[in-house]
Structures are given as structure tokens and as C-alpha cells.
Length: 100
Image (cartoon, rainbow, N blue to C red):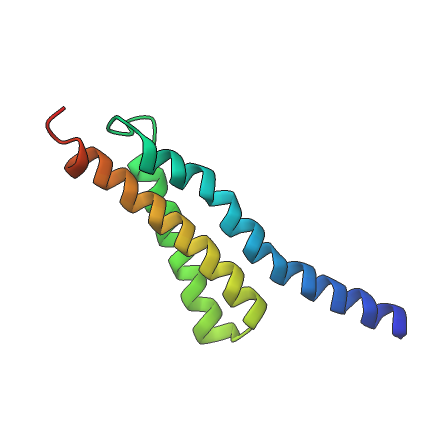
């Protein structure tokens, strides 16, 4: 069916584009953590650690098991965003502002 093919193609394209949206969604938090003047105590290390772990597992699953390029891109964007924020929170708390 032409309609079904168009729908599936559109859905595949839209899903792939969520990698860009997900990546852009992390930017405000990343910028805030870079510009902060404090230890980032309002950010939970445990939460970002869990999200980094689960997004890393999803990324590995996408690469090794699914081998689906759109899913790999979305999983990569989420893993990168979570990892960067997790690292920045740790950096701000234990290195950058350790003496405050």
C-alpha cells in the first residue's frame, strides 16, 4: 500500500530527527552547568548516573543487536547528553568548586 509505505517512511524520518531534538534538549542544561558559579547541588548525581548508564546500555543494544541507524543516532544523542551532564555535575561538585 502506498499510504502505508508513506506513513512508515515518514515515521522513520521523524524518529531519526528526534536525535537532533534530543541533542538540542540537553543543551540548556549543559550551558547552565558550564556557566554556573556553584557546586551544582540542585542536580542529582544519582539520577544522572542512572540515566547515563541506561542510555549507554540502549546505545550498545542499538549498535550490537538492532543495527538500526535511526535508533543508533537517537541512542547516541541521549547517551552523549546524559554523559556530558553527568560529567559536568561531578566536575563542578568535586573539582571546579571543591573548596567552596
